[in-house]
Image (cartoon, rainbow, N blue to C red; front, side, top):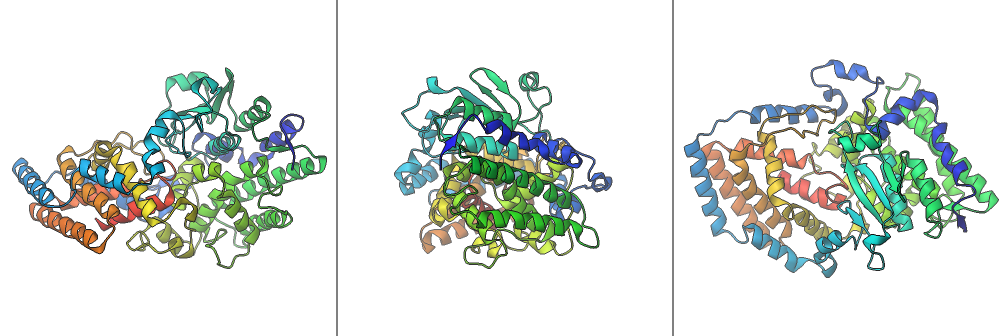
Amino acid sequence: MNFCSLATVFVLFSLEESTSTAFTTSRQNLLSGRSSSISTSLFESGNPFQSLFGNVASKISNLQQEGMMDYISQDQLSQLNSQTETILASAHNMNLSLVRSSLESKQTSEERKFRSNLNKGYGAASPLHKLRLFDESNSEDDVRVTLYRDSASWCPYSQKVWMTLEEKRIPYRIEKINMRCYGDKPASFLRMQPSGSIPVAIIDGVTYNQSNDIMYALEEKFPDSNPMVPTEPDMRMNAQSLLRLERQLFSSWMYWLTSRDTPDGRMRENFVATLVEVENALTATSGGFFLGGQVSIVDAMFAPFLERMCASMLYFKGFQIRVANGEKTNFPAINRWFDSMETLESYQLTKSDYYTHCWDLPPQLGGCFSEDGSKQFQDAINGSNGSWDLPLAPDNNGLEPDWSWAGDEAAAKREAVERVTSNFEAIVSFAARGAGKSGRSYGAPLADPNAIPNESIQPFVDAAMMVICNKLLSETDIESAACDKTLAELVSVWKKEGGNEEIAMSLSYLRDRVGVPRDMRLPAARQLRAHLNWA
């Protein structure tokens, strides 16, 4: 399939604006994080997110309030410190330097290069990159693009631009900007983009402030870098038709997600009918993507929203689209398309998990409505039904396919430990917010940038995290049992002195805030969440 970058691009990109006016507000929310009036009734209760997420968010909120209480005297803290240090000193590998050495001894050569490659802009794609050069054939002098995207990797419009840069292998810099629902935007950004909307890109000194404009400019400015727009007339017409279908699917999804269905099930029926059109379009292709065997602009447009549909429709409506390999589905072509997308490093880099999406969508949209029968799926995705307990069930018991392309279980554990130990002190301090003072003043229930950590318990959170890292790196039953023993000794001391509750609250606080892909990929996140649960 031949692709071009100029003649037909504007026609294709202009379709982003074709969504119905009834969804203008919701669409702007996804772009910028602004609250809307769609679900204002959700915000009339004392805890607005209880109706969104069942009891999960209210438990988190209550824990934070209880953690503000300080029941432990300075003498008790001093004694706890001494006993904790004694237990760790008698155990194996229970200091940060030894954990890092143990990790390095188990890492592959590519894993050991991760941090140095990250600083240089090379190596495998990562959300942690601030400079992306791909390989040594490029230098910083070759960078003509700066992308301003959201810090938490939540924004679907940022995702499709991010994917395009990666797929076209265009060197770029990253500047991370908060969405309004979880933080403030710097004044320098607001001077450049008064609306505050993201993404924004500067290409050859020119500022582009809409996602489709950015993608158009990338095709125009970099015509020889893996063109993603077709040249053949028939394929151009097909692409235009598919992009109109993408907007129809977006609208039907948004109507149902942000509303409770009518008694006759009209919203569900409309969404399913449109999804079947997408299924039929993919069934008609001869390759794994919308336009055949090569990824195109159509796939980049569909990917962020189909991904979020799979998560949100299951969580809020009990409607499953994506299934584990070998499971029956009414949407086999859509599942095959996801399989094809997951072979692309550009999509692997930007892909999130169900848990992250189901907690980040409501504050962006002003609320999402749950239908009867969805609680079992919410419990599974939130981990409140034991799905975050060890041993982890494959594919979260059939609800969310494992990322087999991300490596085996041992690789996932190493990734989790690498991310924790590379920023260990800051992560311990962050976790201690769970027993500190809440300062949340933003829409996202898990965002609490103004929280104050409980410094008095940080040494004990540090100790617990040390045991968790060793448990993750354990390769034998004997090593794992030794971690069990060390943790049991620590818990016995902490319980006796009355500090156990605050430490558990801190570990829970961290567990609930491990984000994908911001912090790590899903297999690593599942392992870290489960081991925090274990502790």
